[in-house]
Image (cartoon, rainbow, N blue to C red; front, side, top):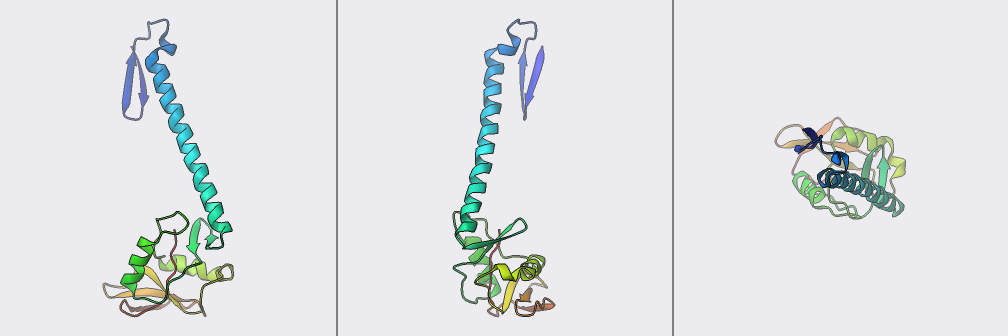
Length: 160
Protein backbone atom coordinates (compact mmCIF):
# COMPACT_ATOMS: atom_id res chain seq x y z
CA UNK A 1 0.00 0.00 0.00
CA UNK A 2 1.43 3.37 -1.02
CA UNK A 3 0.66 6.61 0.77
CA UNK A 4 0.62 9.96 -0.93
CA UNK A 5 0.61 12.91 1.44
CA UNK A 6 -0.69 16.34 0.50
CA UNK A 7 -1.05 18.80 3.32
CA UNK A 8 -2.94 16.98 6.04
CA UNK A 9 -4.53 14.58 3.55
CA UNK A 10 -3.22 11.09 3.03
CA UNK A 11 -4.22 9.09 -0.03
CA UNK A 12 -3.68 5.33 0.27
CA UNK A 13 -3.48 3.39 -2.97
CA UNK A 14 -2.47 -0.16 -3.61
CA UNK A 15 0.94 -0.06 -5.27
CA UNK A 16 0.40 -3.60 -6.59
CA UNK A 17 -2.10 -2.17 -9.08
CA UNK A 18 -0.35 -1.90 -12.48
CA UNK A 19 -2.19 1.38 -13.10
CA UNK A 20 -1.00 2.83 -9.76
CA UNK A 21 0.66 6.01 -11.10
CA UNK A 22 -2.37 6.66 -13.30
CA UNK A 23 -5.17 5.76 -10.94
CA UNK A 24 -8.05 8.27 -10.82
CA UNK A 25 -7.19 9.15 -7.23
CA UNK A 26 -3.57 10.01 -8.07
CA UNK A 27 -4.57 11.96 -11.17
CA UNK A 28 -7.16 13.92 -9.15
CA UNK A 29 -4.56 14.69 -6.48
CA UNK A 30 -2.01 15.80 -9.11
CA UNK A 31 -4.64 18.03 -10.73
CA UNK A 32 -5.53 19.54 -7.35
CA UNK A 33 -1.87 20.25 -6.58
CA UNK A 34 -1.31 21.80 -10.02
CA UNK A 35 -4.48 23.93 -9.74
CA UNK A 36 -3.41 25.25 -6.34
CA UNK A 37 0.10 26.00 -7.64
CA UNK A 38 -1.31 27.91 -10.61
CA UNK A 39 -3.75 29.79 -8.39
CA UNK A 40 -0.91 30.86 -6.07
CA UNK A 41 1.21 31.94 -9.04
CA UNK A 42 -1.67 33.93 -10.55
CA UNK A 43 -2.41 35.58 -7.19
CA UNK A 44 1.24 36.61 -6.92
CA UNK A 45 1.20 38.04 -10.45
CA UNK A 46 -2.01 39.96 -9.74
CA UNK A 47 -0.51 41.43 -6.57
CA UNK A 48 2.62 42.50 -8.47
CA UNK A 49 0.51 44.09 -11.20
CA UNK A 50 -1.70 45.85 -8.65
CA UNK A 51 1.38 47.15 -6.84
CA UNK A 52 2.93 48.47 -10.09
CA UNK A 53 -0.33 50.22 -10.99
CA UNK A 54 -0.43 51.75 -7.51
CA UNK A 55 3.11 53.09 -7.87
CA UNK A 56 2.37 54.44 -11.35
CA UNK A 57 -0.67 56.28 -10.00
CA UNK A 58 1.54 58.56 -7.91
CA UNK A 59 -0.65 57.92 -4.87
CA UNK A 60 1.93 55.77 -3.10
CA UNK A 61 5.66 55.59 -2.57
CA UNK A 62 7.65 52.37 -2.28
CA UNK A 63 10.44 52.23 0.29
CA UNK A 64 12.11 48.86 0.61
CA UNK A 65 9.17 46.42 0.74
CA UNK A 66 6.70 48.91 2.20
CA UNK A 67 4.05 50.91 0.36
CA UNK A 68 3.38 54.39 1.77
CA UNK A 69 0.32 56.52 1.20
CA UNK A 70 1.28 59.76 -0.61
CA UNK A 71 -2.09 61.07 -1.77
CA UNK A 72 -5.42 61.84 -0.20
CA UNK A 73 -3.59 62.45 3.07
CA UNK A 74 -5.98 63.45 5.85
CA UNK A 75 -5.86 66.54 8.05
CA UNK A 76 -4.29 66.39 11.50
CA UNK A 77 -6.04 64.16 14.02
CA UNK A 78 -5.45 62.57 17.40
CA UNK A 79 -3.62 59.27 17.74
CA UNK A 80 -6.70 57.07 18.22
CA UNK A 81 -8.43 58.53 15.16
CA UNK A 82 -5.19 58.18 13.18
CA UNK A 83 -5.08 54.46 14.01
CA UNK A 84 -8.71 54.03 12.94
CA UNK A 85 -8.15 56.04 9.76
CA UNK A 86 -5.33 53.73 8.61
CA UNK A 87 -7.24 50.58 9.57
CA UNK A 88 -10.22 51.75 7.51
CA UNK A 89 -8.25 53.12 4.55
CA UNK A 90 -9.09 51.59 1.17
CA UNK A 91 -6.60 52.92 -1.36
CA UNK A 92 -5.94 51.51 -4.83
CA UNK A 93 -7.55 48.18 -3.99
CA UNK A 94 -5.55 47.62 -0.81
CA UNK A 95 -7.17 47.40 2.62
CA UNK A 96 -4.27 46.31 4.84
CA UNK A 97 -3.03 49.80 5.74
CA UNK A 98 -1.80 50.70 9.22
CA UNK A 99 -0.08 53.49 11.11
CA UNK A 100 3.72 52.99 10.84
CA UNK A 101 5.91 52.26 13.83
CA UNK A 102 8.59 54.78 14.82
CA UNK A 103 11.34 52.79 13.08
CA UNK A 104 9.40 52.84 9.81
CA UNK A 105 8.84 56.59 10.15
CA UNK A 106 12.61 57.06 10.55
CA UNK A 107 13.16 55.17 7.29
CA UNK A 108 10.47 57.24 5.55
CA UNK A 109 12.18 60.41 6.78
CA UNK A 110 15.47 59.22 5.25
CA UNK A 111 13.60 58.93 1.92
CA UNK A 112 11.40 62.00 2.31
CA UNK A 113 12.48 63.32 -1.11
CA UNK A 114 10.43 60.51 -2.69
CA UNK A 115 7.23 61.88 -1.18
CA UNK A 116 5.29 64.63 -2.92
CA UNK A 117 2.72 65.33 -0.21
CA UNK A 118 4.51 64.93 3.11
CA UNK A 119 4.70 68.12 5.11
CA UNK A 120 7.51 69.35 7.35
CA UNK A 121 5.56 68.59 10.50
CA UNK A 122 5.12 65.86 13.12
CA UNK A 123 3.61 62.49 12.16
CA UNK A 124 2.07 59.90 14.47
CA UNK A 125 3.53 56.42 14.84
CA UNK A 126 1.73 53.37 16.19
CA UNK A 127 4.52 53.01 18.76
CA UNK A 128 3.29 53.78 22.26
CA UNK A 129 5.30 55.28 25.09
CA UNK A 130 2.57 54.29 27.54
CA UNK A 131 -1.24 54.08 27.52
CA UNK A 132 -1.62 57.85 27.04
CA UNK A 133 1.44 58.86 25.00
CA UNK A 134 2.80 57.75 21.62
CA UNK A 135 5.96 58.47 19.65
CA UNK A 136 6.01 60.84 16.71
CA UNK A 137 8.60 61.97 14.18
CA UNK A 138 9.08 65.49 12.90
CA UNK A 139 9.64 65.53 9.14
CA UNK A 140 11.18 68.99 9.22
CA UNK A 141 14.36 68.00 11.05
CA UNK A 142 13.97 64.27 11.70
CA UNK A 143 13.46 64.59 15.44
CA UNK A 144 12.14 61.32 16.82
CA UNK A 145 12.85 61.58 20.52
CA UNK A 146 9.42 62.89 21.33
CA UNK A 147 6.30 61.27 22.66
CA UNK A 148 3.09 63.19 22.86
CA UNK A 149 -0.29 62.93 24.50
CA UNK A 150 -2.49 60.88 22.17
CA UNK A 151 -5.22 63.53 22.30
CA UNK A 152 -3.08 66.07 20.39
CA UNK A 153 -3.66 66.39 16.65
CA UNK A 154 -0.75 65.49 14.35
CA UNK A 155 -0.41 64.43 10.74
CA UNK A 156 -0.38 60.82 9.66
CA UNK A 157 0.66 58.69 6.73
CA UNK A 158 -0.42 55.07 6.40
CA UNK A 159 1.80 52.19 5.34
CA UNK A 160 1.30 48.60 4.24
